[in-house]
Length: 171
Image 1: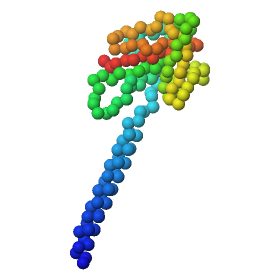
Image 2: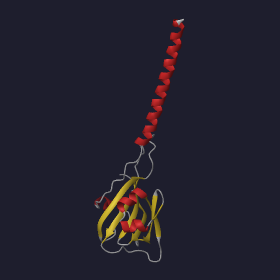
Image 3: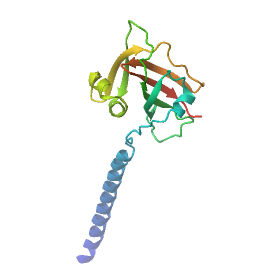
Image 4: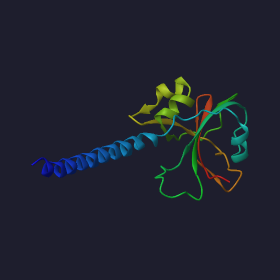
């Protein structure tokens, strides 16, 4: 009688082992989603990389900028280029020349806005859960790209500074 019970017990252990392995794989896959979460944006303050890509307005005293991937990487295929969107705040020694009588809105990710915009600008901006909408006067003339890999998406004057959004492809 005990000899017949042994194969059943072995089958049950085998099935339980399979269930445990399946649960482990499920937990591993769920935790990998957390591995792909984007790191916090790094704020840069160097002007040289910006000046190589775009003609900056005159009188720039300082800059705070962040480069974010322009797309979300699925991880399945390597992209031939790695485009980035650059959010740039420029402190100016004099107000930037702006087109009078018109306004433009620039949408900035909330975590970027909290790192690069001065408090006077960010407190006056409209925000939702993920973005901050900043309103300013369009720069006149708008900054011109210095190479074919860079384009200026937005450029507005706000108070004593300017907010630029650039689209840049790697070299």
